[in-house]
Length: 411
Image 1 (cartoon, rainbow, N blue to C red):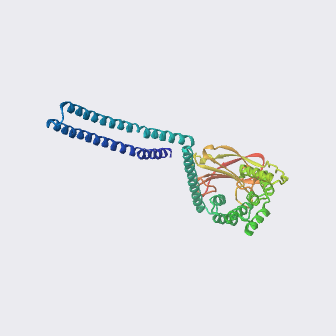
Image 2: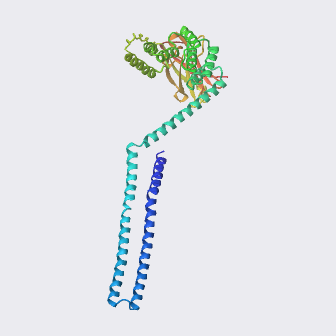
Image 3: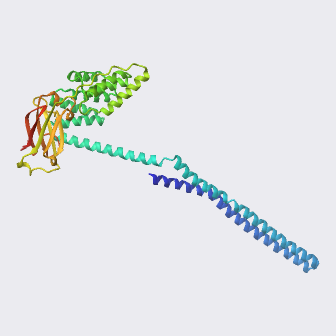
């Protein structure tokens, strides 16, 4: 970008030089031609006058002394005319300093002004930012396409479908997001983490309007989970947009206090600070803040390894998914971590910080089922050919370390 910009500046300067110098070059040529013509005319006039003088002398119409004086006068006149023309040409030649001075000024002024107030750096940075944004957009679209393909191959994989539904919200494909969450409800049943995001998608689809349909979804979500993150964030946003900063502060602070996994605490903290600033400017009193939620100590620990009989059936770069699910009900993971086979054997601990969804957490269950899967495809779930192992019943009190051995091949 900078090279192209300097090329453009050079081209404009060159054009300016041509426009500036052309009249002077033309004028100089004309002046030279005029001087030559006048010199020839003077010489010719001298010769004619001298011939007339010689004729008069030969015809004895003038004396020798008079002839000599007149001839000398003609010579002096010719020399004076030549000298005056040369002086005029020199005076005109001095005017070349003007285009030279202007040319130097243009060059220096262009460079100085560009370096002092120009924006080549900003242009380069803008181009770089645009390229980065385009690259990120392309990467996002590629990830979305790959996830769509994986869901198409595994339509009942709740975890991938849940991720795809949220991807659609980010991509502003709200109708597709709503359909995906509705399918999750069909597979897993009604959960606030499926209904709240639907309300968000519909809210943004309707240009941030709180329609009766959106309100009905919010009511359903909060009836299932009064602390659902998506629903509370949405309500806080709507109150903020409508100028009820106190209400938005309380709702967002409630989300922060719950500290559920996956919560974007940085963005919410900034949002709360912004709302507080606007509230202070309005002169309203600061609301009483909700109390922080106690952090749960529920967890389950395990040493994950692979049986000797399967050690030749995997490669170190393959992905391992280790997760816990409820003993009954939804098979959506309560907590999960992703590793590589090269890390085996390994000690792991699952707790609420590893939760897949804000509402489904280990702390809500006294016992869970543990799974460890070496995935052939690199996607969650157990597919034919995957290596896996499980513990049917593991307590979440954190008092025991279980031996989770990968010892089976999925068929």
